[in-house]
Image 1: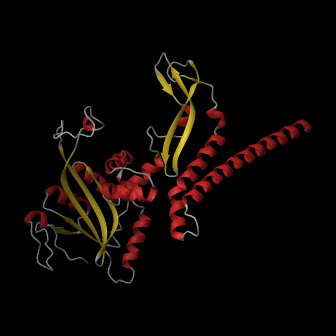
Image 2: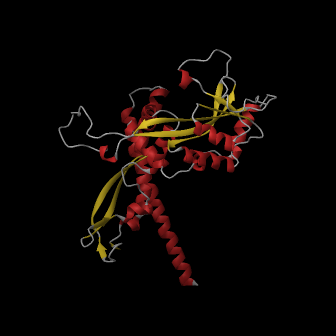
Image 3: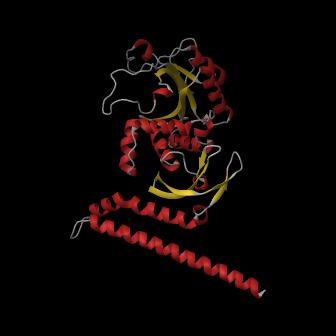
Length: 357
């Protein structure tokens, strides 16, 4: 028992020393950041706005340093790894000189120095430390990708690029945000992006508050042709820099994007419920609508459901099959290119024209 107690006590002492070393390094990191802030602030008595702006501009210098210190302390053994086994030929690989890598996160750019291994037989290189930290292949990491994608789903890509750079300090073009959004959304189903039944019922209850009649839930369905570009058109092209070609060397193709959106009418504003738009055929869109209905996300018993669309037969085929009791409204604007008279609601004549009861 005495030896065991001494071993436990020794482990506690070592852990305590490591913790003290770690906290000392964090304090040193904070001291260096305070020096940066003091240097950036003007002499005298700065205003609150100036202090706030300076700290905000330099915040990532502190947070990134804290993250880097924590990683170095918590993963010391992995950073000092001397050998690994090749994933293909099972040969023992010795560590080569450490390789540095900078990754971009929401808390700043983190510099990582990790061992590198290379199998000359398989011509395969690897850095196991990247897998331990679950790093993305590129510089931009998952938290940045998710934040950019979340913003892009709410506002246009150009606006997302401006707002994202201003709020995070990370410059990202609208094209890059578009690409990241597509990568994040790849493989998602309509249920992955739809709110829960409880959340939808909460929004319905908010609109219904103080009203006698059930709220109107609108389902809008439409399609539009969109241009595309092939994968070969991505990336840099050989040639002189700073000069743009007058004509693209590739031809785009047109695809039809179809989608739907559910939203509540609340006086002179609308309350978004859920939406699903992508390049897809009408059969795929119909399956997505069926999935929404089967999941019980549309509270048909507590709302007055209205479907609006143009004269495309494929729209009303799915509406008749899934929501036959809904009031069906024909959108004439795309057909006539004129505005209907005030107070006139065009009703699709071949379908139901029942009142919104």
